[in-house]
Amino acid sequence: MLDSLPDPISTGTRLMTEERQKATWAIYVWCRRTDELVDGPNAVLMSTAVLDRWEERLQDIFDGRPYDMLDAALTDTISKFPLDIKPFRDMIEGMRMDTRKFRYDNFQELYLYCYYVAGTVGLMSVPVMGIAAESEASAQSIYNAALYLGIGNQLTNILRDVGEDALRGRVYLPQDELAQFGLCDQDVFARKVTDGWREFMKEQIIRARFYFNLAEEGASKLEKASRWPVWSSLLVYQKILDAIEDNDYDNFTKRAYVGRTKKLLTLPLAYTKAQSMSRLILQ
Image (cartoon, rainbow, N blue to C red):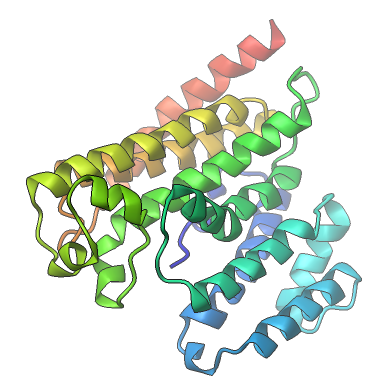
């Protein structure tokens, strides 16, 4: 369900400073543990009470009272970077949503879900990445760009994982837009690529790229040391959409995958973009 977290062993994260790597790892671990509550091996034991207790534990972390060593890593990050508790609370709300809602009538509903489970990650990350002092952009616009990156990531995850989600009886796609192309849940469960499915997927990919384009506007306004890793992650994630297209929109039986070589090949382009935008900010 949730796979848009800043993976601490990803190519992009390895380009960060050591302090930012540790902070990103602490956020990643908390997000992953939160996700595991509803999507992990013990998810059958999930209840509202479990998430309520997890939210209380989050408050303890922010109050400097960690329960274990992993909580302590996030407490340490909070002491070094100006993290806000709200996106963390909102992610927990996203977990609550995922226990009771398996269909989305329209994109407005799906957007809210994407915000809770992934847009929040972008908001958590900005204080760690830092905003360039020389940037004339408002802090709000940069936070918005980070939010849009999370939305784009989650929309991409959804498109990549359609087949896997269908096997679990879940359809994270706008029902009204499926209907516009003569499709419904049963077509998704049938896992058959048709012309209608291809046209539907083309529109979904256009939307995901739209959010990535919005995210790019903020990626180059971060502190210099953060621009290259963020650009690297952004470009790699967009290649998942390319892979779906290369698979002829078969995201039922084929998983869109970006290999290590392709990931490494994005580094020079990401570096060029980060440097060129740096010059634009200084002009």
